[in-house]
Image 1 (cartoon, rainbow, N blue to C red):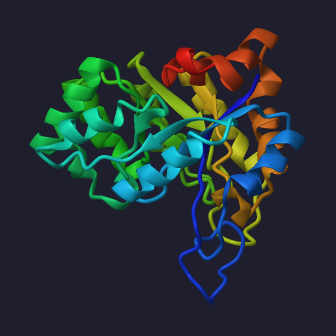
Image 2: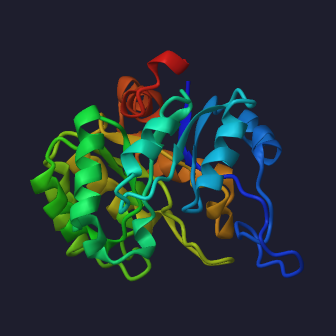
Amino acid sequence: MIIDAHQHFWHKTHAEVDYGPGSRSRSYLPEDLGLILHEQNINKTIAVQASPTIEENEFLLDIANTRKEVIGVVGWVELNDAHAVDTFAAYKKDPYFVGIRPMIQDLPSEWLLQNTVIHNLRKLADEGFPIDLQANPRHLPAIIELLKKLPHIHCVIDHIAKPLIDTGQMEPWASHMRKIAEYPNIMCKVSGLVPEKVGSSWTTESISPYAELVLEVFGPNRILFGSDWPVCLKSASYSEVVQLFEDTVTSQLSAGEKENVYFHNAKRFYRLEDMM
């Protein structure tokens, strides 16, 4: 069994201009992904929100409730809202609502440390509810401060926090990731490794040091496979992303460890026992 722990669906937002593969000017829906999953022998997926709206939650939950390959939805709740817990409680009634993702990639690093945000994150941490952190390297010091305040929070770092692979720069990203990995409740998605620019080139050799660092510090019990489809299509096919993961991660693992990174870790993190 293989779970793709990070993929998206959306309807196109531009009626006339086509900005190329993986862009919001093209629609990417379950019927576009289904054949690809079959070809790659991938059984289930986690659909992750791509817009910070309640409408996005409804869109993805409708898909999850009708498509057998979608086993869960990571949705959105405005965590800087005094009523966030009520909104969260309403969505949690749907068994397919398995996580939330604040879109911190587009927010100031210090957003995570605001009083209201920390109050709401503490409520989620107390329940052990899964949280995706869409981090860039600049967010990592704030995440470390957050973990000091809420060491029991249940988070996964998306896309290994988008290190500067194109320049080969490892620090301070590597040191920050080592520190974050000291917290046993934190996991990491090895996803989003290829460039998010149409036609950009990349090599397995340039990406390998970053994937290897994450494997070293988090270990095979706290890493998840994610394709980041269709965003990955800007510079790689789905099959190339699968091969990249095999070349940089699973080629170094035992059979049991491969089962963990492809299936058991995602099942455990998103608490999917009742969905399998």
